[in-house]
Length: 318
Image (cartoon, rainbow, N blue to C red; front, side, top):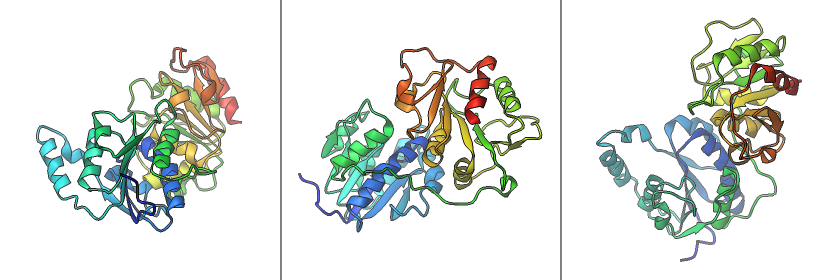
């Protein structure tokens, strides 16, 4: 079965996570460039939908309420949700998630042509009409490979279409370093003692702490703590307007790399070569070394920064 040469309706399936949604934006931009008249609809989790609002590359959003599908009866609720996923004459569906549930969503839409990644898990690739090899690359590259398999040429320049909302008023006019120390991944978040030492060494430069986590009980006068206080569009603005961004390996780190050229990603056990910041101007810290993500040895044992190594991170901000 061949893909439609000029699809009118394209379904993009990438419900989560934050970093994964960010990494899919250039691929969707490539689809828009290839078919400027097509209506592109994105299936996404409600928590990440604000990132896609007013995105010129997409026409509509379908919310995937994953939280409602947990528990012993979650499968039944998911199947019921699929039953209301009415086919809308989709000419093409593209599964960037590569899981069984995302493949089922694509099949429920009854597209003429269904494309996905060859490294899809849980048997998802058996639902596709075509899958493309893209494993072993950075997520941005893998997603672009899938978009190219669907018929979109590789763009000369990658674009990350993200909200242009203003930042919080409390930091208006500050020339600050944005600091994101939190992560749900085990061992990725900065320990409180190291976090406090880092912000101490950054003084007197203004520091703005962002993200979701347990806020510090008290902070020095040069620190504005916005922990748990920003919407996603506001978070984009804080990261975009910073003089530099320091972030642990996390979704907000990838968000920062999409909107700010001066980003330092702190990697503990994760490998920068595969999951580091995409932007080539961004650097990664791992095991005492600051370098481009491709220059880090994936065999080297990772760890948390030591107090004696924080000076090099501060000097990078200058």
